Image (cartoon, rainbow, N blue to C red):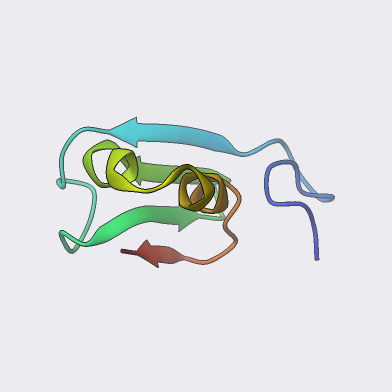
Length: 68
């Protein structure tokens, strides 16, 4: 499995923090991964509520969606 932040076959992943749910389909989604753009959208409000270890895990996810 490729490292999530800098995949073997592409450019380093971009993180974009958003302050509201307009890019998320449900209020409990912390992040949404768009592999075609190598972009990870992160809900800043929910992300800030997570413990440090879980924040680290979200930033390196390879899942399409992360829920709290």
